Image (cartoon, rainbow, N blue to C red; front, side, top):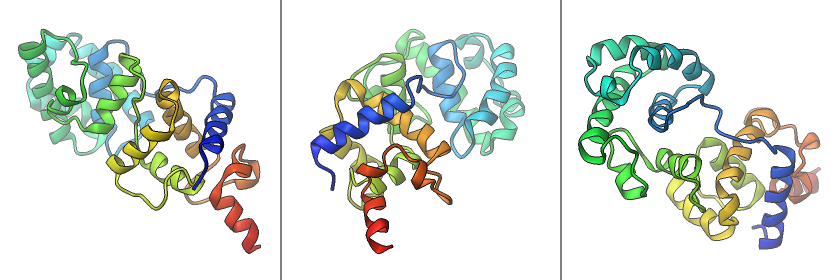
Length: 216
């Protein structure tokens, strides 16, 4: 396991390496980010960004989503996979936001995760990126894999358990940015099937790298 000093340095190096780290989904309105994250489940952000311009042009308001025919929404999101469930959740979510929250996104984990199709990962993203709430920690597949490799967590695979551990050790004001940096790092350097350890800015602090170096 890494010490708190090492973890703080990992955060510092990641923020320096990816100073513009942010969510790679395109959005302008708060609810657009919520719907885009739902579409991104089991799909790439790149693919989602390809289909949302037409989707948001066809349904330009939350009211229009709430009144939409789910079958028509399906046509716009078909290429994202699991399109029936995603279209159903988007329309249902729009209705709840209008009926219960006057068209605004709620600001708590409990309220967000009660929305159709919204889990803790999505809720944390909204809390961090929309409301800038410190401590918001998005645990995706990159975060699960890389925090274990680094030694920030030890053998944990369950996202909620990892989230709890990260909340204990990450500076709250940098939690959201850390998670965005980890995604970019996982795509560019610490790639699952071909990690480029020698090019990694974190190698001197990485538990996995230490282990492999000793073995070699």
